[in-house]
Length: 243
Image (cartoon, rainbow, N blue to C red; front, side, top):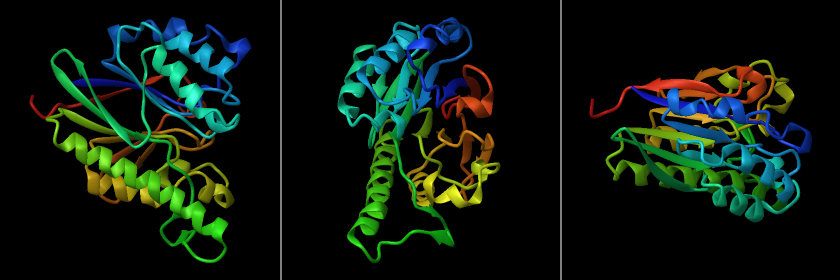
């Protein structure tokens, strides 16, 4: 079994420094990889990113992350990304990475994603330029995720995981107000996951949501926002394709 630890929405600031490190240091004994599903900082400042970097540096397991909307708030996502990468994290946006653990090849494709809603109640590329750009941005994120998953399909991975911040399905939003579903995710991400191929999809963002969901294609979806899972991380066990 391949053991995947995941958490999102840790929203670290100065007063939270060091709070997750003791739990993260247990990861080599219980997980093969740590996935961070965005909103790692509160306001997306380099200073907050440096706090996250200290939490995840030299953990003894690979760390793979995507950014969230909070990590973009200060409009310096490139700096946040660079700080996390300097700490050893693989930070993905329309990209894929393969990390090794005990001979297994774990493929992760990632994007922040964006909103727009779900089938039957979603935004369309129509009307004002700003509205069209809203949907096109989501589509670009989804296309990047699809391409990254297809890339993994060619790299002989034991498991393939889709890592996003925004949700690909409404299932894991249950508990959130219906009125804000369009701002919590998009069906375009689920389409990318189903057509690109994945064994698990992990996201955050919906603090009042539900942990378990599934795409229409049968891919398991897990909302790992920390307020949802209620702990430093949750570990999921996946059978490898090669035994």
